[in-house]
Amino acid sequence: MTAATPAPFRASLGEMDPESSAYMALQPPPPVTPPTPAMAREGMRRARPFNQPDLPHVGLTREYSVPGKGGAFQVRYYRGVRTVADEALPVQVYFHGGGWVIGDLDSHDWVCRAVANAANCAVVSVDYRLAPEHVFPAAFDDAVTATRWVYDNAAMLTIDPARIFVGGDSAGGNLAAVTALALRDDGDIKLRAQILTYPIVDLTFDYDPRFEKGVALTNGGMRDFIDHYVPDVAQRRDWRCSPYFAPSLKGLPPALIILAGFDPLYDEGEIYAGRLKAEGVPVTVTRFPGQMHGFLSRPKLLPKSLEAVTVIAAFMEAQA
Image 1 (tube, helix red, strand yellow):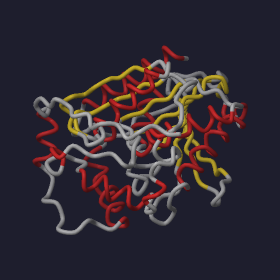
Image 2 (spheres, one colour; image 1 turned 90 degrees about the horizontal axis):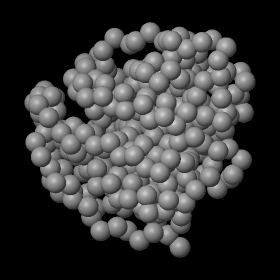
Image 3 (cartoon, helix red, strand yellow; image 1 turned 90 degrees about the vertical axis):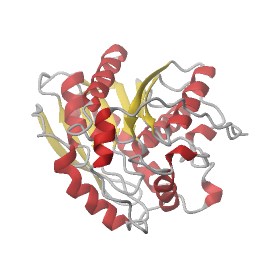
């Protein structure tokens, strides 16, 4: 038995923050037809210098190849700049956003560096397989495999296997949530906490019609991502892509959920937080009412990203 589709939760919108309004004013008109995945990936790559400031120095970065069900994939390992080389650190396994279609290790390099430095921790960023070349459950499989790899290689990475966090933004928040469910069910790895930044939790959700246009992520854009990742509509209630439909959320690790007000995903984030609380999971919800989806990885133009990093670091330090 799975949870019923929730009644739509409609946020009470205030004003968009001035920096969010300015960001939207810089955007070109939407294309007549949706961009192909290749075009969207190139657009994200080209936008990186405009969205991200200079990368902060960290104590260490290193890349590893992880064997997976669909072949090897890369992870990038960071240690915060003020950490001690031989200290076993808490670690966040991080899954980048991008609708399971775009994004990579470089698109969220700033985020991972900033979190590693702010939380004095390690971060392992995961370059999971992307749709539509690799549809569901490819990204789910890679996310769970990567987290298990971190646990199994704790000594090599000099991290504490009892202080593993999973986290991510958007589609990455989705992967963090479903990884937490999978590992809870398997029972051999106990995560310290989950950090979900504007996560996708219900691929059947009825999006707020106010977000059909005028925001960084529109309802149509979200539907396109879902179509690429889970083209089989019958699979969209599978908890491995829609964690809201897991039969139970009991026993999951504590959760930090960060939400942006001007975001199609705001409503389902609130509903997921409510269900977690109702089933006994400690939940902290931090809301950025005037921000848009994607603000965490756009600190140059949307500086509330810096506040979100501080929130993530404080949560990790409190849980660690």
